[in-house]
Length: 512
Image (cartoon, rainbow, N blue to C red; front, side, top):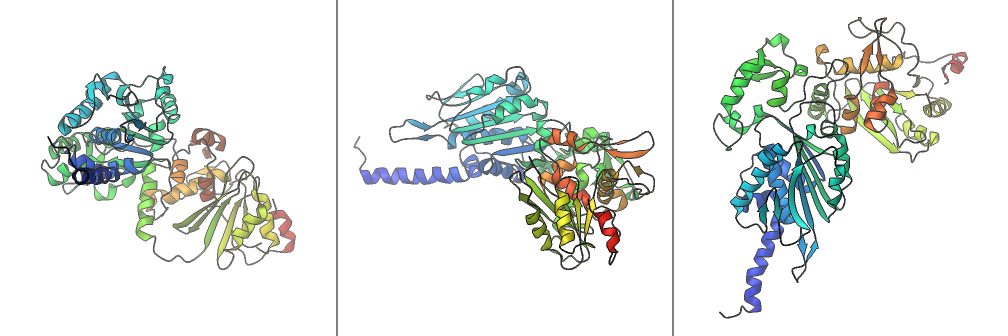
């Protein structure tokens, strides 16, 4: 056989290089061209997110293809990230780890998807061994094994230039294992977690509301096979299965009883209310919020959707600015701007652990023209900012919000509840504002930090019948940070009495 000329070699190699780089830049193209897969639009969004983001979380209903797209993502990472020099030496290694709470889930759910895709492609380097794909390079492999809460050190060997962790049924894995995985997320690293959202606690649940993650919810009601009532995507949930579950796990309701906070939905011309099994297994939703949680996630989601629909409208009336000033050991000062039902913006300013009262007061003075109320937490560093605003002539616009002060005489919208202190009143007013029971028109900009804070807050009814909100330190302990955004938002519900002016004799009584 005659050796190829340099030109002939280039004619063969260059198109191959261009195609490979096209795959590197578009994992969905690689999946379609090489693995010959057909992903639905939401699965394609998830694969793109895994390609471009470091952490992705997917909560899903039954048979929506979460494990399938996870396997596709794992093989994309496995074969598109390693790099070699001109001597065919591995210079950028790649390791992929698949894990689940039990060995059965690895053997029967995760790895079979990998095997089917590997065999269908028919061209991938390496060989299938047990639950692994092994190549001729020791530092380039994919492996699957059970997550063991007693052996977190098992994760210590996964340092590589390119590292990916794929976790299925992630809600069943303890936080310690995730901490061990997090310790390996360096260089070009990915973490993909997929699960049925059967509980609101733990790493997986928090990931759905964390700004560190790009999150998705796969709802069987929106599955292509269900919407079109035919098999569009093989292996995915079908119309008949969902129809059966609607009949078995849902209750028909009347229009006047319809409540989005309950997860109610429309189906074939009727209205239905799901039980928790349907919420988790069909809709990919968390179970109904526990009785002691102040604000259900669904209320926040509804407020986010209203904000998106109305975000381009002009706002008039009073601008209420809830202010939470950072002090020692805290990173950010927060201003939340609310016009009646609409939160227009959330400002966060890095403090570097130091409270600069003059700078914060200066920032607030930018909004001093027109109708504005500064509602400032004056327990701590906010007291200095409040005092400075009074010095600047903001006596009728600046208000001191002390969470520990009495809420005597204040009630909720129904007149039924009283409150242990002003903090409880303000947070309950925030709850009433979001509550669909009161025909809520609340609009909140999507903000994962705020969402994460709001769903963590719990309350109790005391023996005297008054409402009390749990201590801020408990919320901080669970979040791992101070809930400053929700505190600033709650401040916008401080009950002020607007006055055109105050006698000078009252000024001293207002100062913190």
